Image (cartoon, rainbow, N blue to C red; front, side, top):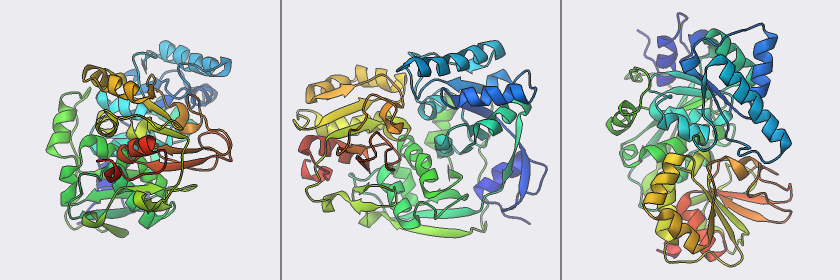
Length: 419
């Protein structure tokens, strides 16, 4: 009897085809979404293929989050195309002021659920794997077809089993764990594979941290990153779910294409140096690497626990006079909770600027573009050449504790230098 990995098991539950690694399977899609950048080409392809209605308006969505509030005429026109199409179709759409960064907002709203297949026209759709969904990014053309048909095809991915041994220190979070994995695998080490996360230590990683880890599976080349949902995660989902769902688990004795082990007892706060997420190094070994900007936010680290960690270091301190600190909560649920708890005041008193939920500077959009010669410590997911602005700028990837410590000290810093 075939013993399935988690990715194989989810696909098997959605397909009549044999869900064996390497096979092509036609699958039922549970949810499909795009953003203000990827929706317009999907809408164009939807019309070109002769489609008239999306397969289920309650399972199709457009979220304006990348260049919104619109920064110029072109971005305003893009947002309008998506808004008008969503209105005509009666599909899910949230206007600015009521939305957030898609990969944070959709789980909050109960639209990404355990055991489902979720497609998003954005590479970091794999964030949904933190909830036990096989969530993966697709191109706008494939998304248009899924909107029309409610089905797609998937090549069943091989699976890399990632095992965390030992327990993490209080200074180590989800970002450190996933950077450690990418450092071991490299940016192509899990190409088109599923990462399946295991280990006793995961009980210490909250959902926000799991989302960070699933989010960056793509940075190792993976198709998706999957967690077996814990009781706490299932309780979170149960309070929010817009549909009925059932978690799908891997079988005991499943066969994995490869495996990687991370010893958490030896792991310390790390960063990824320019210009690849695989260039991982302990933060304390970065020497006097001066910085000009810190960005805390994005679909990777813009959630409540990320902001809490930053405030832990920043409260009662000041951002270095040479540094700009930009904080962008990933949703209004995060923003309003941070407001109620006084975190926004703590941040602004430290010298940070706090902005409305948006992807903003992560993709070089706006509200934090880098000039030539500038260096930024960012809690986002990519540090490619020119990702946040000038091709002559540099990005150092880090978790919120390292980012906050760096903002105070004016250089890439280990949080233990402050607390």
